[in-house]
Each structure stands twice: as structure tokens, then as C-alpha cells.
Length: 437
Image 1 (cartoon, helix red, strand yellow):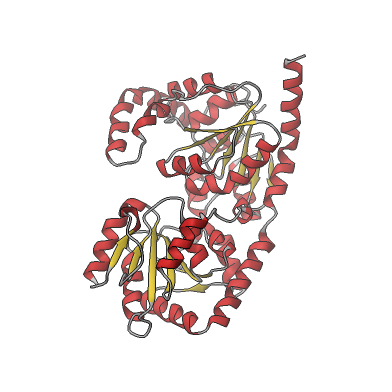
Image 2 (cartoon, rainbow, N blue to C red):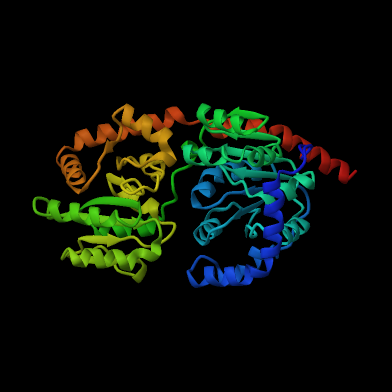
């Protein structure tokens, strides 16, 4: 089991002191987050490390991911772990990921909010759950969480490890700090050779390239009844989706719709914002452009004269990916870093995206290199490309098929990750048999 054989870096020692002192401020912090809708009031105690469920008997594998993206990526791993008979504790830090976990975690898997990274909260969490193995997804390097778990001899493994250029540049200013944290991991399973080089340069001692789990995510669930109702409401329309959009992008999408409506009066633009609570603000953008909008969260349908149908709900992206042949992936016209296009591709959509896709550069690089997606930079180019694909269905379908082949080519990470974890599963079985001998 890794440990801090060298003295703890001054930065980590200071961090632990500061976060311990800041515990007294936690109630105020949580109150502010509650007021902004960033916490679940019924489960706020979990953020202080107070459990809301008993610990099941037997080996327990703890899986932690920051938010929705990490949760979706690791869900097939959770399914495989459950198939081996181990209980899974899934932790995340956002309300939306918790809501998704409630719908999609398999039987025998639990969800808790991750505690704030304060020593007493982390200790309370670990005292209750006693995880036997911890899997951290992508780049969750919370110091108290990592150091406290390692001090308890819990094997730590980073899976789907990702180190963006920005994070790498920032961590290079603190080499002793990040090195001390990374050396607590038994193993770092990373997405690419670039990630491997960056983690290695920062001090991770054991690295294996397993590929990107996001290429192996299953197709999103689709409620057949809801799909039938949506298809009926949009009969005779030409649906185009703008998915996971961010502030600054909806106005571009609305402008593109306004331009296209002149020659394509049956067009229906469906906007699914990354943060559903922004639905009313998007409706105001549509109204300013003199377009009719409807909010799904308020029970409105896309029937009638609706121009912009705002899909401000959770867990329903599969419906519109199934329905629409053209999808613009948001977070890419603004400097957010893009959103994951793989789920839409698996439904056969032709993908449009902006230039800012650093969060998913591997897939977008391959899509663009093989002509399997279209890059747009403004409303004019978005309008032009959507219009071209509406007119030329064969070209659109060819783009979508190329994209599907790209995703298939880059898949396989799930099997490699599970293979790398198998020795740890064997150890858990051995320990469990010994405990019951």
C-alpha cells in the first residue's frame, strides 16, 4: 500500500490545517449552496459525512466521480462489479448526478453525496462505510479524501484517468504536492498516451493505458411511452437538437432557427440545456427573437406552432437523440471545453460542434479527421450546415455512419479496466472467505 514515505509537502500540511479550521464555516457554505439549488436539502447531512443508509455486510467497492459525465462513464464498470457480487457505494458531488444515480444505478449499488473535503467529515464517512477498494474517476484529487483513505490502507485506483493541458500546467507549479497525492494510488488507469505522459511526469508511479470508458457507455434509456407521445406531437416536423448547451450558445441556436425557418417552416429546434434550471431564460431568448417556445418542465408539448422546444428536464436525452437526425453538441461555441457526443452518435445522429472541445479532444479529433462531424463557429455556419443536411439526407446519414464507426473503433476500454481490476477483486474474495472461515 502506498504511503507518504517522504515528509508531507508544506502545501498539503497547510491545506489540512486550513480545511480543518474551515469546518466551522461549513454550515454557511452549505446554506449558500442550498440557496443556489446546488444541494439536496433532504440529504445535506451526507455532505458532512453523515450516512443516510447502513453499510451492507461483505466487501464494499467505493466508486467516486465528480458529476454526471463521470457517473455515466463509470456506470458500466459498476454493473460489472455488481455482477461479481460486490456491493458498490457510488459517490458524486452534484444534485443532477444524484438524481441520475437514483434512476440508473443497478440493484445492490448505493449512492451518497461525497463529503466536503474537510478532515472530520472525511473521517466520519470512512468510519461508517469502511470501503475495501476505492476507484476514483478521471481526475478527482481531493487531498483529505486521498490521504485519509490511503492512511487506512484502502487500495486506491484511478480509472479513466484524464489530465487536461490546463490541469497539467497548473499542477506543474506544485510538483511535490501532486506527486505526494498520486503516489497514494496503487494504479492509474488512464485514457491515452498523452494522459499517461502527464500523470507520469507529475509523479504517478504505476500507469496503464486502458482507453476512454466513455466510448463504451451503453445507449441512453428511452421510455417507449414518452417517445411515442413525443413522436406524435412532432409529426410532420423536422427536429434538430442542441444538446447540453451553455449560456451564450442558445442565442446562436435560436438565431440559426430564425434564419432556417424562412426556407424550412416545418423546422423544430429542441434545446436541452446542460443546466435545466436555465429553461425560462432560454424561453426569453426565443421570445426576443419573436419565436414561439415551450418548456417541457411545465408539461408543455412540442405540438402546434412551437419553434423552440426547451427540454429542461433530466434523464430524457435519449428521447430526443432517438427522434432527431441532427445534433449540435453544446459547450463548444463557448470556452467550456465541449460535451460528450458519443451518446448521440450511438442513436445515429449527425454531429455538429464548435471549436472549443478540449474536454473531449480525443473523440472530436477523430471525428473531424475522418469527416464524421461538422465544425461550426457561428450562427451563419450553423445555419448553413443544418440546412445542407436537411436537404441532403444521404450525406447526413453517411456522416452519422462514419461517426458510429469512429466510436466502435475507439471502444474496448471497459474490458481492459475490468481486467486490470480483477486482481483486486480476487483479493476481496480471499479476504471475505478468510473473514468467514
